[in-house]
Image 1: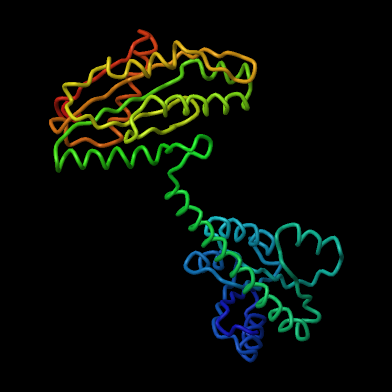
Image 2 (image 1 turned 90 degrees about the horizontal axis):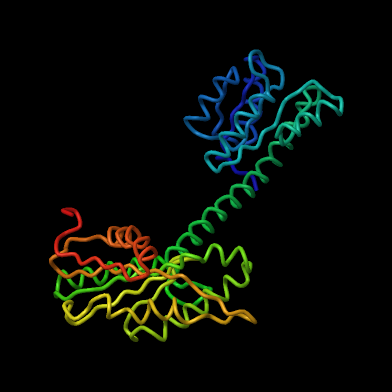
Length: 324
């Protein structure tokens, strides 16, 4: 079905030709028609507002129809738009037409048969542009839906634990609870220092199996209400809220450090030893305000100390991070 509001831009350095094309389009019912006397002027008009259909003379001074097409395709890519382009040409040989299609031209109209071809070709372009526009909009909606699903997804598909997004959200929630009700929290970052070497030695399949095994062992070591998450291929994290901060020290989590470093993991026929590090950040209301990103960064900063000492590296925050 014809769309009388289809935006059309006619580009021709011959004014008489533009007038005749515009009159024919008006008689066919099209209302949104703009004119440009050069390719440069056409590009300026397209910057102000894109068009659905562009009718351009192939041979124009300074910039011809093929060069104009190249510029428009670049604009379309940047703005997620599609301009249907028809060139008006006196060229009839197959090589010229093949060259036009190779440059991104959608169709062409021979000037010798302009009167007979113009409106049927414009009708066809109108239908195709409507289809292309609908597909672009569906793609945009799909991209929005995928982004929305990704933003809501908080489960690590490999281990079934929470992922980094879930951990950050829970950390923010716990900080709000401490601010409003008091209390404290402990954040443990667990890193496997030799995981890159193990992955290179045994391959990706073993790497995934080992991550699942680590997750299972950690689940057995933490309390039911503790938050356990896999951050990436080398790191896990635990978030716990102790009743009294004074009762918690690195020794309280030594079982986690030892369980990863002392007891081997059996993967298929091999027993694999890990070199794990744990950095511990403890805080209460005295350390507020605090952002999850700051705590996560501080734990990452102290993890190498645990690798070097083969002990839990602990930091207790008694004042806001901004003042440290």
